Image (cartoon, rainbow, N blue to C red; front, side):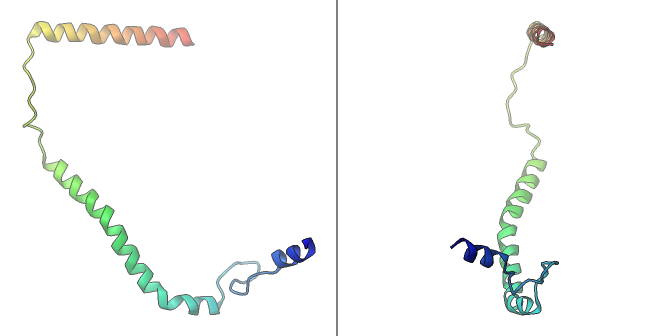
Amino acid sequence: MLPTLARFAARGSSYYENGSYRMSPAMIRARRPYFWRNFGTFLIIASVPLGVYLYTFSFLHTDDLEDIPVPPLSDEQVQELQKEYRKEKAEQAAAESRKD
């Protein structure tokens, strides 16, 4: 069985040229009727995600996000948040320096 398998694997396809692996004229003729239908199908299928992307981009590009309520913060609250932020950054930097 092994010699038959090796002989089958060594035989090249008649639809591709040996060495260059180009399609033979017969293969090109066989694929020609399907080219434009396949291309049209590709365009239809590719237009769906492209349309979703463009619609989303145009929708988000025009949104100024003014409708999102942001609570006003007093100066004391801002300073407290800045302290917490600096403290967390210092702890992260210390942890990074311990790793090295």
